Image (cartoon, rainbow, N blue to C red; front, side, top):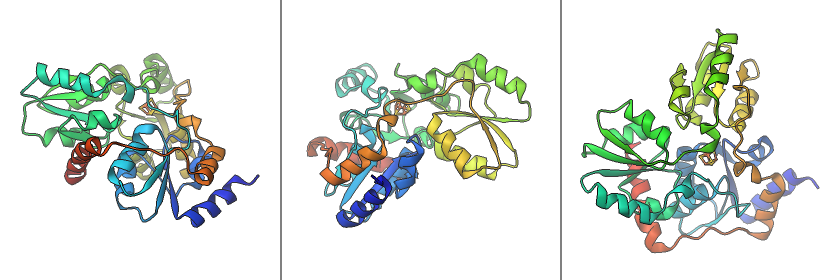
Length: 299
Ligand code: SF4
């Protein structure tokens, strides 16, 4: 079956758009109307003209699109595609921390579920985390759930950052020794690292970027060779966008197995059978929307 053609037909018939995260496999990126990082896709979904949004990503991303588009049907092609880091924290943990740090502002990375977004003051992405934290009047900030992104933010702000002990296993598992070795073997390469990586790896970076920042930077930089420390889907996208540049991965493939659960077939079935619908209780959605919109206003 020609899934690509069938997906295009169903998109037209159903007035649907497909949004895909940068970590999706290339075939899925190719049928998407938009490909981007969490911030770009959240922004896009807020203004998209369609009746149905198929979100090729993990659950919290589709949920964010639903929160911003309560009147639209939002579908996640694989119901078990979830972000393990987002599932490391829930609303009760945030409330517990609120009672421990009553004077602190609470910032949640967009990689959280709706119940957590509903409990915090503002949401951020890796692209705007420093800007969001610096915009807050409080001196202390509880940052959750990613301890590595929290560490990166703490290096770039005068505020006191209280990190939550969550992490992204994909970025945490990049081996600092492998990055150091590759750097030594390729002294002419620029090292660009995602801030979800461990501090020892971030320390070796020439530049630290979100995925959209990486795409922009590799396109603009005069360098011909890059060591890129992030999920493999983004590396594939860079190789496709810039075939004249050499994109090296540090010794191992960083693969998010949840992102890779989505295939062309599951996007097709999602559009055909209208599954799996993402629902967010309105009381939670309202409070989560306020925290997301606050971020969109700042950035
Ligand atoms: S790459 Fe990491 S942060 Fe992104 S969805 Fe996978 S586990 Fe979550």
